[in-house]
Amino acid sequence: MLAEEIIISEAAIWGRSGQKVVRKFRCMGGNRHGRIVSKPAQCFAPINIKARATMKRTRARLGARMMRKAKKTKRINPASRRIQMMNKAKKK
Image (cartoon, rainbow, N blue to C red; front, top):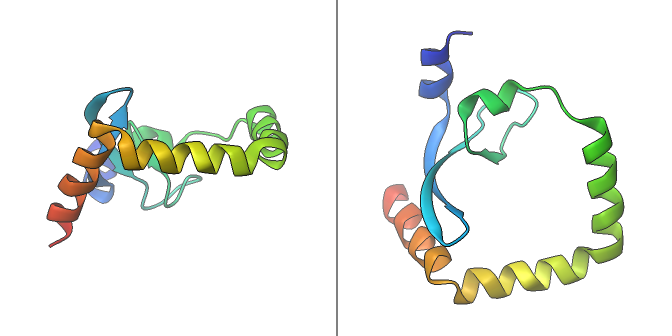
Protein backbone atom coordinates (compact mmCIF):
# COMPACT_ATOMS: atom_id res chain seq x y z
CA MET A 1 0.00 0.00 0.00
CA LEU A 2 1.33 3.47 -0.86
CA ALA A 3 1.79 6.13 1.81
CA GLU A 4 -0.83 8.38 0.15
CA GLU A 5 -3.42 5.59 0.29
CA ILE A 6 -2.75 4.98 4.00
CA ILE A 7 -3.19 8.65 4.90
CA ILE A 8 -6.44 8.92 2.93
CA SER A 9 -7.92 5.74 4.41
CA GLU A 10 -7.22 6.69 8.03
CA ALA A 11 -9.61 9.07 9.80
CA ALA A 12 -7.82 12.12 11.22
CA ILE A 13 -8.96 13.09 14.72
CA TRP A 14 -7.68 15.18 17.61
CA GLY A 15 -5.85 13.54 20.50
CA ARG A 16 -3.76 14.43 23.51
CA SER A 17 -0.04 14.14 24.10
CA GLY A 18 0.59 15.29 27.66
CA GLN A 19 -1.11 18.69 27.96
CA LYS A 20 -0.93 19.39 24.20
CA VAL A 21 -3.62 18.80 21.59
CA VAL A 22 -2.22 16.94 18.56
CA ARG A 23 -3.44 15.27 15.35
CA LYS A 24 -3.96 11.51 15.58
CA PHE A 25 -5.44 8.86 13.31
CA ARG A 26 -8.04 6.13 13.77
CA CYS A 27 -6.96 2.94 11.98
CA MET A 28 -9.43 1.78 9.33
CA GLY A 29 -7.48 -1.40 8.59
CA GLY A 30 -4.41 -3.40 9.55
CA ASN A 31 -3.44 -5.06 12.83
CA ARG A 32 -4.67 -2.09 14.87
CA HIS A 33 -8.11 -1.68 13.27
CA GLY A 34 -10.18 0.85 15.27
CA ARG A 35 -7.26 1.97 17.44
CA ILE A 36 -5.99 5.55 17.68
CA VAL A 37 -2.35 5.99 16.64
CA SER A 38 -0.03 8.96 16.09
CA LYS A 39 1.09 7.93 12.56
CA PRO A 40 -0.99 6.10 9.93
CA ALA A 41 1.93 3.73 9.23
CA GLN A 42 1.52 2.29 12.75
CA CYS A 43 -1.77 0.68 11.71
CA PHE A 44 0.17 -1.86 9.64
CA ALA A 45 3.17 -2.31 11.97
CA PRO A 46 3.74 -5.80 13.43
CA ILE A 47 2.40 -6.44 16.94
CA ASN A 48 4.92 -6.56 19.79
CA ILE A 49 3.87 -9.81 21.52
CA LYS A 50 5.89 -9.20 24.69
CA ALA A 51 4.43 -5.72 25.22
CA ARG A 52 0.92 -7.07 24.58
CA ALA A 53 1.37 -9.82 27.19
CA THR A 54 2.79 -7.34 29.73
CA MET A 55 -0.15 -4.98 29.21
CA LYS A 56 -2.61 -7.87 29.57
CA ARG A 57 -1.12 -8.73 33.00
CA THR A 58 -1.02 -5.06 34.04
CA ARG A 59 -4.67 -4.50 33.09
CA ALA A 60 -5.71 -7.64 34.96
CA ARG A 61 -3.97 -6.27 38.05
CA LEU A 62 -4.69 -2.53 37.77
CA GLY A 63 -7.51 -2.25 35.23
CA ALA A 64 -10.12 -0.72 37.54
CA ARG A 65 -7.61 1.80 38.91
CA MET A 66 -6.48 2.74 35.39
CA MET A 67 -10.09 3.27 34.30
CA ARG A 68 -10.85 5.51 37.30
CA LYS A 69 -7.74 7.60 36.65
CA ALA A 70 -8.51 7.90 32.92
CA LYS A 71 -12.11 8.96 33.62
CA LYS A 72 -10.89 11.63 36.05
CA THR A 73 -8.34 12.92 33.51
CA LYS A 74 -10.95 13.11 30.74
CA ARG A 75 -13.28 15.02 33.06
CA ILE A 76 -10.76 17.46 34.58
CA ASN A 77 -7.82 17.97 32.18
CA PRO A 78 -8.42 21.11 30.04
CA ALA A 79 -6.70 19.53 27.01
CA SER A 80 -8.95 16.46 27.22
CA ARG A 81 -12.07 18.61 27.41
CA ARG A 82 -10.92 20.68 24.42
CA ILE A 83 -10.34 17.48 22.43
CA GLN A 84 -13.83 16.19 23.22
CA MET A 85 -15.35 19.43 21.91
CA MET A 86 -13.20 19.43 18.75
CA ASN A 87 -13.94 15.80 17.87
CA LYS A 88 -17.65 16.29 18.59
CA ALA A 89 -17.74 19.34 16.27
CA LYS A 90 -16.07 17.30 13.50
CA LYS A 91 -18.80 14.62 13.69
CA LYS A 92 -21.64 17.06 12.98
